[in-house]
View (cartoon, rainbow, N blue to C red):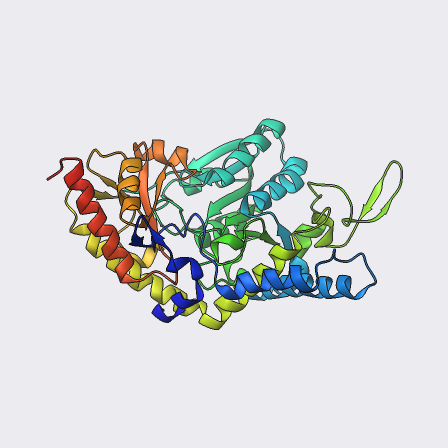
Length: 406
């Protein structure tokens, strides 16, 4: 994958006089020239609103926008682009389900099942819906190796269970979620399953038909695309029954003074002017990943993550927060360095040109469960090379010297 780095202009930067080792891809990925150029081309050549005009620019913009929808739908194995809704991102997608489906169908005593490893985007919306409806939130905990503990699953799977929402991959520990097991459990009682795939779709070959869930949400900016856009895939029969969470123009077929009729899916969920330029960029990002091949992306991630785990194991005072088995995890590696605060670790690494994330990673319930205030997190993607890892490890040794751990 080393040859791909030339496609990413930001990787030519120097930070604090050092080569940039960008290890924060779980927060957002860098963008290749192909994506940057596609967005610029839209603004330079055919900037127009979609679906509404009869002129040439409007037609070209609409073709590009709907073409991007088709590309993204095919990327995840959807049977039809009608099942693919463009949203502002994974957070927006989960809120759309919570308010469009959950708010209208949950009742007091119903259960929503989550896990303690979820991102706030897959916790807070359900807290709000539980308050609105009287539904009960229940959580699966973790095993000693940071994976979701399924030993208590049967005790919460009954006729009261209506929704299961689970991360495909933790943005803290890197552990994969037990999606297949939860889908099987949901089918026994007629519950729906939502997969927060913000971290998994960018790194793993994805086939929504094979996964068997009812909804899958992900974000463009975590897979080489622009910020401000994501996608929600849903089963056609559920999307057709689900109410829109936002109202406005474009998502209707008729509006009268006291009632409206919704447009067919997916348009009934896309109120107002959509993120057109972002959709064009999203489509370009999918083209790029398709050309590389998602199996190759995963292969590279396994190699670079194993290399990182091996190198970090040789750093004294470092504690890994996540599984060590590469088969059950992705390329997100969280750790603690002695009693040095993760923000201090990240600051020292930044001085060495290394970009990592430090904090609770929008997963405070998980941090409390693990009894850690925060972690430093390095995360990888297809442009990550071993030199980036070596640069980080050298920076960690320098941090140990500065904070008196040697």
